[in-house]
Length: 372
Image 1 (cartoon, rainbow, N blue to C red):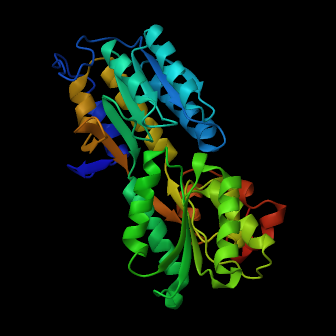
Image 2 (image 1 turned 90 degrees about the vertical axis):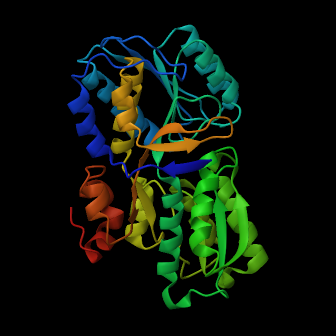
């Protein structure tokens, strides 16, 4: 995947911009195969999410998109939802059904970017635009909404270097446990991280993790401990929080009394608690509300044929393996460490302090200034 920025895009800004354009009339047809007629508020948005093992999809993405679609359509629009349970063939069938049911637009977070491409092509042939959500699907997608994934990897890499401090050198052996090879985002995270880590640390072992499974990540970590020795691992790059949990279990089971710094991504509640406790050094906070609201805005506007507003939202361009210059909305990210918990997940209302600082973490919370 290649992404080219035309301009910096912030969702809170485009939200205002979309509202300012809402009264515009006589918008022009698009030449990308999407609908060329104006439609009212009675739109149907298909939403296809990849799995439910990662907490964010059911807790944030689905309900926020549904709520925002209702808001943008005066309560008349609806969301048809399906989860693929990490099954690429199932997701292709789900997309085919939505096309058969004649939804107006589909948001899809692909289980497998390549395998979904034929179903995306069939949707385009049926004049139903598909917007890739969070993961850049292949095929003739009409738009893309995601976090700035290269920045995610850079933030993770910078975090690991900061954690090592004066110990960061080409003699410092680190283990990279990357995401799923079927998820194009994983390669971008890895590339971003290596842009920071590659010249400063020794990447002694590197693994790709099918399906982002924590148990697979744990097995990778066990392999690395056997190969390198538990005392010779300076730090661990984990591409997300779920895998970080498995990695930390492996490190603890090895008998280490002091864990090396471990990265993560997604700011899942167990990971935030591990950060509080000092078991996981950092995560990457991605504002799911910002991404979900932006996706709902783009989906509703393209479904309604309001292409000026759609283009105003998509201030970036991306390429997948089959399609160039895809209109894209890329959302920025922030590091989550002990020092930034208050200014990220608590400030944005993702978690309450009481949710983080349960009895088990009460003392650790107090030590870093978090109080219930």
